[in-house]
Image (tube, rainbow, N blue to C red; front, side, top):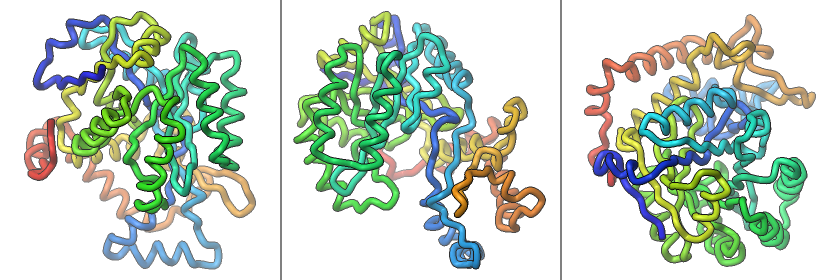
Amino acid sequence: MSTFSFAWKDSEVVQQFTTGVCLHGHTLHSEECLSFLPRYLKMAPGIAGIVRKYESGPEPVHFANAWWTPPLNPGAALRLEQKQIAGVGLRPIVSLTDHDNIEAPLSLDGEPVSVEWTAPYDKSIFHLGIHNLPRETAREWMSRFAAFTAAPDEEKLPAILREVAEIPECLIVLNHPFWLEEGIEQSDHDRASPRLLRECGEWFHALELNGTRTWEENRKVVELAETCGKPVISGGDRHACEPSACINLTNATSFAEFAAEVRGGESFVHFMPHYREPMALRIMETAWDILRPYPGETGRERWTDRIFYRGDDGVVRSLTELWRERRPWVMTTPLHALTGFLQLVTARRMRGAMRYFLAERGEVLP
């Protein structure tokens, strides 16, 4: 049975549990594609022409070859989530899930080895949370996942998921089911989603309520899960420095015990207070966390150190390496103005005013 609660409605509910579980968080090992960037930049007056120039010049920039990485290293990401859970009096269990990469959990002793697997399926793309793989075979599993992603064969996916599900301490979660990957048509996703659930749903243990998605979307996930006879589970989907906006509450003492509960149909999702903040404000805070400097992160202090581009020669370089002393105008004056604005509006003293101005009157809240 799935249950969910909200801190602003029932803050005492956590006292019924001993453990908080954080699922689905990203570290510097995730590669976040920037192929979407031109579509948004072209909406900005004065910028559209510059973007087209970069795309069609003698040495065109292919934004699909660029990506950014989240600012937090694995240890910092783990401590951030542990601190939030411990702050409400619970024992923390944290499952970090980078995109198609398990280096973060492998670098942390005793933590679940988990991943957010990018799985193409029927002209769409789905993200699957694979939690708590056995450490001794985790790299072998990653090789199988990577092979499928590189050359998808829809007939092979059910068999792969079945084998993972046969590992009793593992969890398979369909992350943000209604989220649309950049470049995927809505009609293709709408067709692929029910097919995926029909042909592979037997091995999904839960559907995700996502801490970075609107409640309107999460409510649709609840309805979908009820239709499928699956529990819902939390997924913070943290990419920057805001801790997960939802966690699972349990009395389990290990991830394996927690997995057994969920596989048995039991899940208690608790939304943290900041989930109720205006989504626009949360997005701006995340943007500031992505762009601001991190003096303690040697080699990754500046945002240009955390964005990468694969050139025509196949070599991957950071923007710092590419630009050196010749940073493009579009990435200096306008961006400095943007970062200054973000720093101002996300300052603690401004939160009350920004909360008022950014609250969307039509935004559905629980």
